[in-house]
Image (cartoon, rainbow, N blue to C red; front, side, top):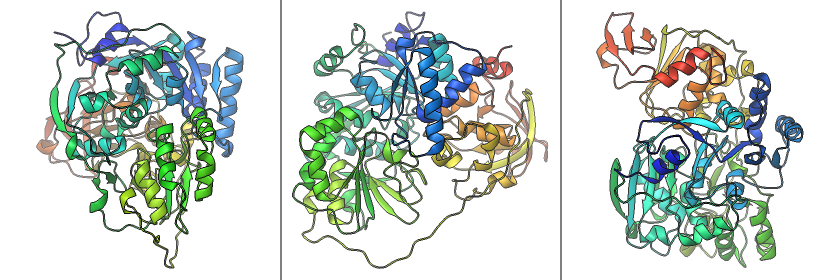
Length: 605
């Protein structure tokens, strides 16, 4: 039996000739990066455990979360990373460079068939060139920097054949939003997706980046594109080592194979709160906007900038609307300058910032205020992710057209007279919290009060919002746990040491932030039990020796919110102490237990 692209890449970086879904293997990592918000924690782990760097030529920092250096805590973390880099001969792509995942492609650190890890949850964007990239927490990254390897569970693969031709008005962003409408946030949870078809073959690198960058929002491990000759040539001109591209075997086995007719795809928007809550732009009620954002790792490439420029050319942004444009990398920014696009953007009334993640990172260009309505080319619109307002996701063409119209629309429906504002009032929000306590115990049988939160897709911004990412002291994290989850903003005040959280599917989807695990450790929460977990979140929890388990059903024990349950982590036996009923959930697997008894990935027995 042949192997898929993911399986072949993982096998070629392991000691095995072949691998199959479910295998847990150590793999060599070709590119190992840390960003500014996670980098300081990586340095702390390396320093605390006395670890060294295995290969400095493959190890680097990328400062893309706060390239303005405008936040004091970010500035401190960046300086910690710079000092560590100086002392260890590491490359720093500093605040002038742009988004790290894009730089890995532009600077030749990855190529078709390569592996890479980053503290960026969208490191799977590298699937655009047929590379296997993964976002991971700071413990994983520290381990990779020290040994050059990480453990990984081989995912099952899905093959999607995109048949037909895309309508002229449908962009790459519309393709992924249409796919999100079909599959949602967890149908393909934990899968590696491979895309095929004539429509795929015709896609440029920039278009592939747009689609690959939203694998995380689908719950997938990665979206992989078989590289075309053009992509291979682009990478050969930059790669720091010779390579041969990797393609699936003709007899590769896929969990699912589906044919999807893209000729019926339409321009889409994702409504605020969930990237998979998509609707056709023309089906959306007239929606007045306060601001518009074009950029992020999803739509900050030169093709996105050119599309934006063509729509804005000779026109002005609607009165009262703020349009913010942020190229993905400095190379794209300079290309915009050379082509006269920066001047065009400014003449249209847009704010243009230096390259970086922008709206997806707290404190950067692209954030919005409470009550503000934004249409954005970003990849996430979780509550609070891009600010306290509402965020619609759309393509650069729709965002640019909407900025001119004053409401969400398509380029073919921009009115001669833009919509103007009526008078209104804003509101403010106050943050509350309390000081935490932490626990270092690692029992194999746990007993605690249940928080039954029957929701799917609880993302990392709901768990630990990005405005707190500069916090590195675990003792400060607990007070912010769930403060962005509707109905649970007072969780930290009400939680007790020893409590157990029980949730739905895809818990911890979204960012790679370790704080989304550590905030529970800080509070003394004993475990999170969910129907399924976001892939990065599960790794982070396991690596931190924080129990995370999955279950199919608790119906047998008639469990309610506030009940006390006992869980055997090794057998999965679960007892409702109130009624004595017993059921079985999925226990620790061997690798998880080994890390747990060590006290964490970087601990010692």
